[in-house]
Length: 236
Image (cartoon, rainbow, N blue to C red; front, side):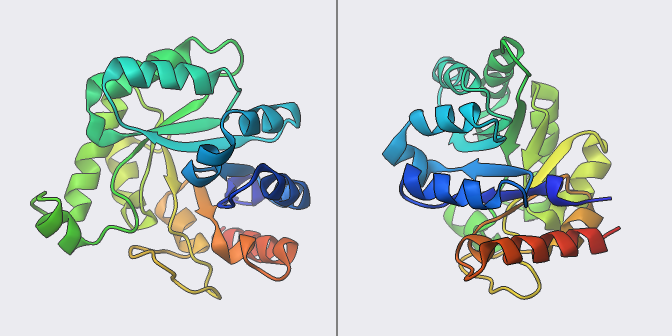
């Protein structure tokens, strides 16, 4: 049964002090915290050191996408800070993903979960086809990237919960699926396009959901987190 262990809160705030306040407030309500580029660009690796010292699980959402050698070095630096999981872009190809996987294998402590980002949840079908120039349906391309990522050594993918079922069918139930773009039934959609509720995400096969603004911007953040967990529990 899904519960708070499956809930990742996105710490999309600009300072370490704000992230620390949120983490302290929600540490008993959620399973993990996501640190993204906004916070990392301002605070650097010091913030990962703080989470490690506090024994708080972190998903480092750095979305590495570069030549294999550079991604290997960046991955090694993140792995050294005891993150629970981190990600690279699947579009970087098998050699790049494999370089990150090799860095994970060399971890001194627990091996982190390596994820590959398929298609951003803010990207629509039209944007993928007309602006990026990728033909076909979003679902087909996501499946292709998921399979590529698995065979390149990734432990799972970041994808919309709308594609979670087809990923699970193609890659197996043990292949980790992390789904951002989650909006509780009582929250707005914001700038996300391909969104799903917490209960539907778990029912579709997601292992973890990422929730940001509906919790972080709530007047009562603990209560908002508990409401999300209630929706997860309703998925059975």
